[in-house]
Length: 345
Image (cartoon, rainbow, N blue to C red; front, top):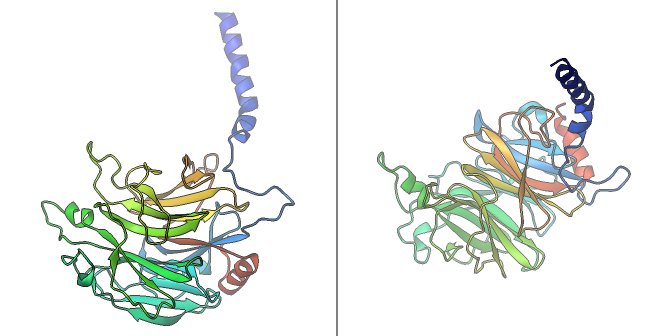
């Protein structure tokens, strides 16, 4: 008995002595540059809303794509903006942001900025939703418009989600399951020559869709908006579809890259440009998750973070941030934003 106590005591002391080294062995997310190396992607901007100020525009920034600091003392950076922030760098080197005052508003407002500081109204677009081919039952709802400029075809694609069924007290989820992703094309975000069109051939509820061209393929990152059950286990997860061209045809969605009840995905390349970081919100505004892969086809794994336990956090955000978009910016742009708005420590 005495020898066992001695052995246990020695084991406990050994574990205590080794614990700092055990923590240090937890691997950090890949994609960071080594000391002295120059990053391909120097800095990042997260344009977002706050839990207590939904639909308004706030900024946070990062130098590594993992650890984020708020700007402007957590105050709005542009009071006129309403919507789910989504920013794209355009054909002319300027930045464009899409938004709308509410899902029931008939208009999509597009703003433009030279420097991400001063925004001016570029155009207000009013889509004729009921003219969408095969979707005459569309309701007057426009959710989370997003812009992507495709340099390969020299045009913008603007996407949003529109439902075709009202919710009810007995079945509120049918409203969300009826959401379909629509799009329009434009050369300048002022002229839209065609009517809205469904983006996907397959019949499934989708929201928060954005598109990126990576390599030879186009990828649509989606939220599966069907409620999860034993018979639809992918519901309310982030999934990915692939296509040979901007408007498709897009493949059936991949297996989920997130747990259930996640939305508002955001994608950025790592500082060394070799890894993809996919963020998504655990709603309603509870936390953020991060999935990581070295190519868009996966496999993806989930990193630990935003727990406010430093031993576990491999990424961090200011508290109360809600969904928006993330983009790469230059170090000069980062410095200009930090100098203008002030960087919160």
